[in-house]
Amino acid sequence: MGGVAMTTKTVEALVVGAGIAGLYQLYKLREAGMQVHCVDAGSDIGGTWHWNCYPGARLDSPSYTYQYWFSDELLDQWRWSERFPTQPEIKRYLKFTADKFALHDQIQLNTRIVGADWDDSAGHWVVRSEAGEVWHAQYLVSCVGMLSAPKLPPFPGHEKFKGTIAHTARWPQGGVDLKGKKVGVVGTGATGIQVIQTIAAEVGELNVFQRTAQYAVKMDNYSLEGERGDYWRSQHENLKNNLPNTFGGFEWTLPEMDWARSLSVEERHELLESCWADGSLKMWVGTYPEVLTDAALNQEVSEFAREKIRARINNPALEEKLVPTSYGFGTYRVPLENGYYEVFSRDNVNLVDVAETPIEAFSENGLIVGGKEYELDVLVLATGFDAGTGSLTQMNIRGRDGVSLTELWSKDITSTMGLQVHGFPNLFTIAGPLAPATAFCNMPTCLQQQVDWVSDAIFHLRDNGFKSIEPSQAKQDEWVSHHDEVANMTLLVHTNAWYNGANIEGKPRRLLSYIGGVGTYRDLCAQVAESGYQGFIKAA
Image 1 (cartoon, helix red, strand yellow):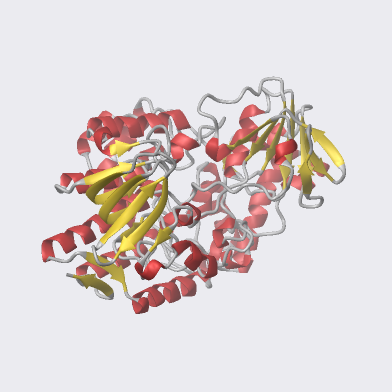
Image 2 (cartoon, helix red, strand yellow):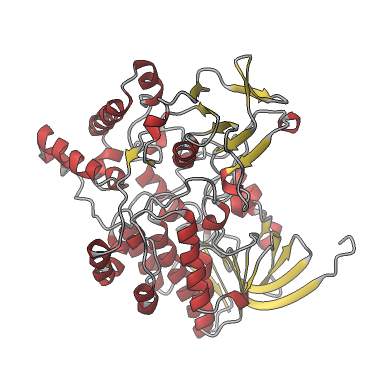
């Protein structure tokens, strides 16, 4: 290995990733007396909230739902400052948790996994790091996140560019000096919107390269000091019990299907006004389920959202570019914004439509679009991720008989409940594809449920004398069929979005997230455990 000393360590479980899921998974297995180790490629813990330190990075789930529920003491000791806190506060919360439960000693940072092979005769995984370290682990638990493999733009010539290029998902920890600079932002999804609205007043000139206009909802952020904070703290027990049973893992519930059709247009409009005024993702996953299944009702909601956006712009030329019309509300990820639309009325901001005229290439001084050069000092790439599968496929995981997970998913993206894959014993994929955690869930709600399921499966094996578990091919086929049946009832499968892998050239098309609801998914997972893991192959 080029002079690098090889070291081999043996553990019962290796957890990859020290974000929300990884910290909790480490805690659960350690508390059960297992020998467990956690590795992370970052220089600090936090996962997404370590890497995504770009200007304006902020939570868009209410903080009082975005937390751990396993410790009443932790709930009592931590106080969120606002409804939608910024990245530094979320990272502080995760570090506070790791400190409180003394997790740091079992976490190894700056460690990137580049290979994992299942040794069938030994009944364990052989996992390799970029630095040449090797772990033998009976259980390999991936907690690398569903949005953690950045998508790089397809246009050529980046090596020519003399300025600075920064991807929002790999933002330099020391920041980037933007003051007075000529800045470009490629991408106007949730992340791009946060960056744009934050830096517009600081930079000298801002070119926003937009391919897809967004149905962004006006955020209603507020302080959690005083009575509001006290109220939500009083709701901890209710939230802990109820969040896992809702559709999206938030504090609100959806009515039954067909309910919206029983309302008049005026009554539906009144409901939409209420959800819009909430200033949260309730407008997306808290109105009524038909928004995602009924084309006529979706059109009604889409036009409602368009009118809200038009009222913010008051410029016909900009309105034409910024108001989405090519897809329905909610079939793309719905961002929250705070002053985004007003940014485009600033003299130093220019909107460049790259749907009409795509970006051609980098130049030494910027980007070329339609033969025109846009001069830039800094280019911010908010170009999204290879969602759901990218982080796992980059780890070069090989299961029984050397089968490559990367090659398998390059042909067809399958899993069993997003938690395991046939042919890969004792590999657990928290936030893997075909589970709500891939996109349609308040992340801590789903991640904690998945960690609990994985932990219980491991404890079941240990307590009953089994050494490995994997889904049968029949069980996996059954889950994929159910997943597709539910997905095909919705409008999402008809939209070219990262939800379907459409943002990555050559990626197989399948809705990456299970859309049957967080509560339904939880019940299905519980049924599997209660059946003694029927449909799973357990080896003694």
